[in-house]
Length: 174
Image (cartoon, rainbow, N blue to C red; front, side, top):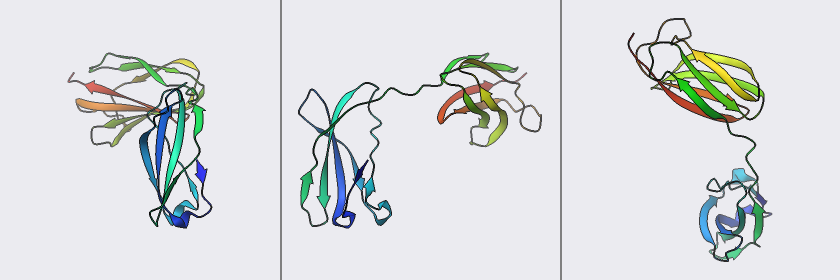
């Protein structure tokens, strides 16, 4: 994140990255400006790994065509706070109850929903508290009204503390 005192003079920013042990920078993105930014700009570099040591610099391009470089900023990408992991889904495909196991790095509020291939919610499976570690959940193949769903492809979506995980489940004919 960076702040510009005169955003009305800026047309765009080009963001460049380099591993800290290399002096050659490559462009990794661009940030345009608009009155709604209010002079504060951000760029999220999603193509990095935890513990990467990186240097960044920004090329500011003004509306009059002039440009100038920022100073180099160096950082180490922090470790992720945790990753929600699917450990198993059994049986899949299935015409019966499906059990899935999630490994949660943190305890927290969890929401589990089932969607059809169109993206329509079929079932709110669970909303509540998850413990850190292994958590077991079941889907009996029913929708929110208690009726069995038709055979097909469904997606289970899990949200836990801002992290999201999805898994495809195939329902077969009984």
